[in-house]
Image 1 (cartoon, rainbow, N blue to C red):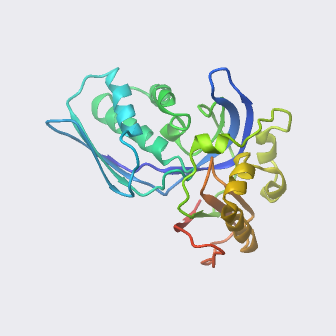
Image 2 (image 1 turned 180 degrees about the vertical axis):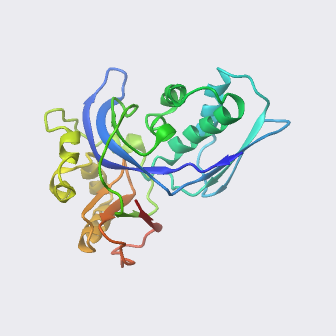
Length: 267
């Protein structure tokens, strides 16, 4: 069995306050994009996890965490997961969380097809803050630590998104170190309901200030996106991927800095 874990961008991200459990309360809108990894699951004599594509640092992987969670509710034979990695790590695109969520979908479809998405979301929320979003995907408003989700209705159909990544890895811990929480400002949802032309001045990602100070070349990419006609441009998540939303398909851009990749997608 095979599926295609997607990625996401954040349309604004407010860090509201630090919680007693060490996490932060946030509010953000997450938009699923059709730029994806490839995940395969097959039954095997011994359990295994293999990868190809982009190199994945470290010894663990959220796919294995997802398998461990699913085995708590269902006994099934050993499986091998193979992950072909295309979504960059540490880029704020949620690729690792997506891989875990899509692993849960593979196991559900094969071994327990009767359980609904709500059960998978509860399992996914134990694995990572963004994981639950990828069970339904689409466009959702997230609160809590990112796992409390509700549908969001914005008309972005027909617009284009450009993703730009310089190959810089920004860890979530690193990004949070420079953020001062702020719970005294207009709701992000209120800002999102305004015309998209207003977003440039009002819709912020709180991680940008500290991440841009450490990596000023990211701020230059954001500037390039606006100079080439983006209606709205921002960093996604805790970084370091930048995105621009365009009314029309963007022409290839001459970047002020070398980029690791750029991707053009239609919404």
